[in-house]
Image (tube, rainbow, N blue to C red; front, side, top):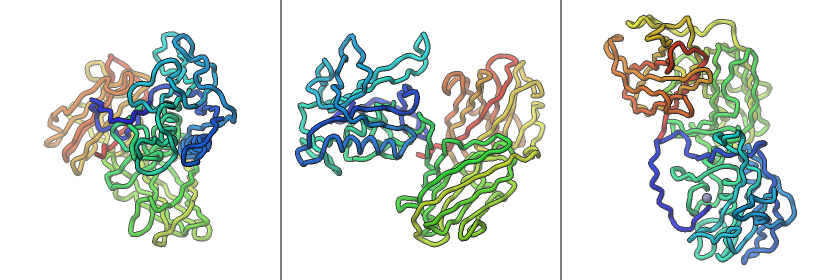
Length: 466
Ligand SMILES: [Zn+2]
């Protein structure tokens, strides 16, 4: 639903790294067919059908979701009333009512989703099987870009918003987004909108860094297989971040093993320059793992081959000359090295070993070789905070009910101050801690809620940028 007036939502939220709001319901195959046979033109001459097709293409081109147009006219209200849930076909049109009920005050348009449960108790997210959009025909509609006019509503931006509901997004009230609850001067999809669609359907997602530029997390970004490969394409564009007058795109990859990496940045349009930097949990660069290359590839292309320690890396795609714009491709081949990651560790006063692990992504296992405390296994990781940072720590496991501790360490491992302990603050039985941390040394403790639980787990530490 899209309202003309400002809706005041009494919603207080933690500053999550991303703002988008998935509804939880999804199209099973990441695509929706829509009947787009709307006829007629707006008062200034634009075709409703063309504006709708542009809005569908904007979502399809920029996200992992795909809208497919069927060029026929169907009444969106067919078999939609209090006892029927649609005719199985998704359609869009202007209607004088909301398929049987009146439009609410200030309501511009409404999306009606038909859901089927995916389990008998209907506790898991449902699948969307039909989605109809009705536009309030009692209002003045036109097609235009830029600031809102009155009383004419812009059909195209409202279509963008409703199509977001079609694919499974809810309202977003903390970020600039077409999915904000009220129509605004925003007339096109924002990065938060694309991130929301990609979060649901497995495309890339971006997050804000402390350096002011966005970092893209590709759909496949964590590599733990013996042999892995990835290909990406992108474009240096005027809207990109700049370093020394050169545009740059930054991608994040994580390797859970020590890895021999072969990384190429190729372009027929720019003279590429490639960077690879290992990052700590607090988004600071870890010294000694910084690579850059200009021309080691074929022709002017860039290539980095190196043996790198397990960890999270930022890959920068840029140009060797200032102000170069154009498309590029990235090819990554990685072979896990047999050698174990040699992180320093020491025995704590509790008897449990502490691993000094600065990585934002840590993959581990609770098991019988671990220290046992109160019949629960315990793994400890030490990391450093150099400047005050708002961190979110997520502990997830499919094998056991994970319990997470964060401890500040003072005076050479004297018992530290327990900053926070969390059992089920994450999704399901997983754990999440959000905390502003002052400079210092901290331990992350991983244990289980129940006695003697064991299994694999993942820790993800993200910096929350205001
Ligand atoms: Zn809405």
